[in-house]
Amino acid sequence: MISDPTNRAAGPSLDLERRVANVLIGATYLSLGLIGLGVLLMIAGGVSPLDQALAFDPGRFVDDILAGRPEGVLWLGLVAVIGTPTVRVTASLISYLRDGERPMVLVAAGILGVIAASVLLATGLGG
Amino acid sequence: MAAGLLMIAGGTAAGIFGSLLGLGGGILIVPLLTLGFGLPLREAVGVSLVSVIATSGASAGVYLQRHMANLRLGMTLELFTALGALVGALVAFLIPDRALAGLFAALLLYVAVTMIRSGLRRGARDDGLAADAPAADLENTDPPGTLDRLSGPDYRVRNLGPAVGGSLFAGVVSALLGVGGGIVKVPVMHLVMGVPLRVAAATSNLMIGVTASASAIIYLLRGEIDPLVAGPTVLGVFVGATIGSRSAHRVDVRVLRLLFVVVLFYTAWQMIERALR
Image 1 (cartoon, each protein chain N blue to C red):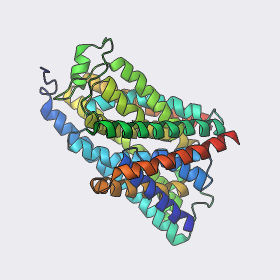
Image 2: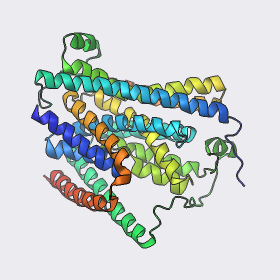
Image 3: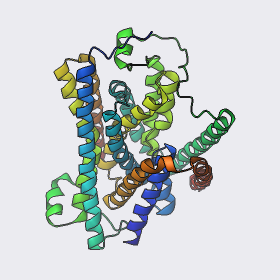
Image 4: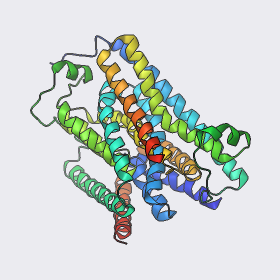
């Protein structure tokens, strides 16, 4: 007979899953909405995927979006897609901290550490 | 704009196929973009990674809402898939395009052969997938508290050590080839750890996001993701995956599987030619 190790924390655990699911679904649809808008701008502006795109530059998002350039909205959407899992892990970390689950706090912090290392390494290599 | 519409259509087809066959769209997007649109392999891998994050996000959320995915287990293993993905993405920039094409061809052939074998096994047994196959009985050195925390209400996980190794490997494969890595993660969780197949598939889906984003960040910041290509493709794959998941019960997957195996062999051949060029 297998004991139910999740019984003790079943309530908070289910709440946590629901919260994390809502974050995940909301962020995914938001980012896909941005990408959809960017594709509509591409179609409206007659921009082809085979055209030369503007390079990724976080400092230009706002200017590109205000100028109605599809790249600006597309970059924002793509960064949002790539960032969604990080938002999900951060939401989990906060919930585990609140519930006092130290091992899972360490796991979540470790994942965020690996993602931060990706950014640092990519920036270092790019430079 | 014809190319954009073709990319949306191609992404949609890849999403439908991948969703119906439980493979994710990644395995088809890279060949579509490289062989169909002439994109360099690394750029195609970068776009594919973004696509798999987008498609896994919404479905993983639904799995969590239905309590089908094991969040604790998924997060513990994705620490290692993310590490593997970080290493894989760095390695991807060190090896030539031709070597990547060769590796991708090997992956396609492996998937094709696996699909043929599972089709034959299913035909012989006619009892579907071995949903409750027991985990391999490896020497277990995991502390019991850790395993209890990662177990579900009606199953107990084991063999965490080998699963960590498998997760690292899955991350490397994902980052190098732009796929979700479920082809490694699901068997590791199901056969090695004793996680029921449906939970393993749902948990793998949850893990894809973090795994792919650890490497997609590197592709993005190194300028290997073109927004004008990624936008239509990601949108198409997401729409296709949504259609596929909603129509799965109405489609005869046996015919589709056969067609898919032919496509995989043809694509593998094209990739081999590219590797040898």
